[in-house]
Length: 431
Image (cartoon, rainbow, N blue to C red; front, side, top):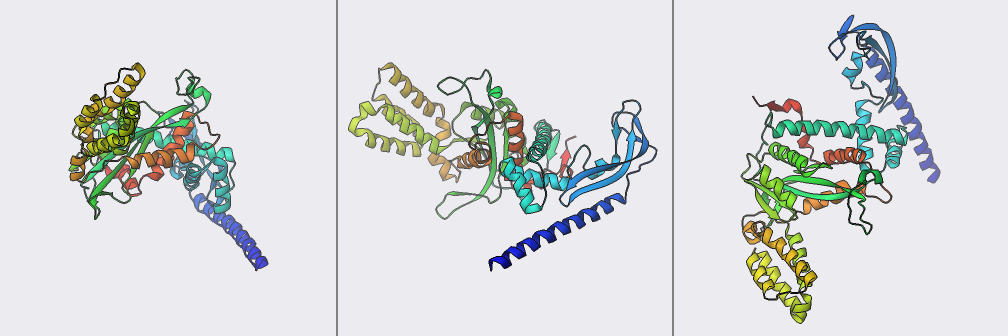
């Protein structure tokens, strides 16, 4: 049994290698049918004309193995720029990978460490690539995708690009926003203050936004997120830049057209600054689970005064929170005046969290209207999109490298129908 299985595996590998070589040969012949001659002169891309100089070979890797193509080469005498029009038509200008292999490499590199990605490509696709090449190609793809996305976001936020509204139009759209740290090299944190004992920063914050829709409630009356409705955006850029990405994604997902648009967050001021500035008509909801954590912290701060009434007091305040009765929480806290300096500051800080977010904590009212009151979807995104790939043991990133991989992972985490909406031919420019 064992020998037979081993023989079959060996036969499979030999046949696959032979078929790949055959496929590469056929692909090369098909591509060589058009040698890319486009006349004696072609535009050089820099305002001049490039003249035909002859034919040159180019070898690039494909999903079928290396392919060599002999194509027409042009050179511009004025700027010294050389080009092969055929390369641009095939999507391999300045590249050593075909579009198909680059896409395959992006998936593997975004899924796990680059060494593992190289092994996956070899084992599953029969393609051998050096680990460093896997890394560089993925980072290049991610950087190009990020640049295109930010330019599209700029045009959309400025109302110069008008995406078609979703069809069918969902009833409710949500934007859940959060931030998480990514371990980076010491050069990336030079001069930055951190939370460590030595005061040095060791991470850079990635701001993450997850957009999703909801049309239904379950049998118990709780909201149900629409299947495959999530789209994810992220950046290392400051809140002001991230806010433009949020605005553009909201417009693209139909925030101007849905009946109910809601922003979910953990209570951080920068999140509500974005929501108020970019979507002033949106409902703002503080994540209930974060609010409960703050209430537990408030109870701990008063523990030395509550004594054996601690559990009873906390249970009553949790009930107040569920009904959005923030003034009741404040009144209950004021019954125990704290005079100790550090304790007083602690109590006031925790109580301030509730007073500052009171309009965003009307949980009973929100639930009656079938709205989500938890931002778990973005916290899951922080763990799965960012943490699982970029926070593994021993990892320290440059922000540019991390940003590229994050962009690839966000793209892959976003639902597939959204790629249709991102097609430039499926959008109209505003007049």
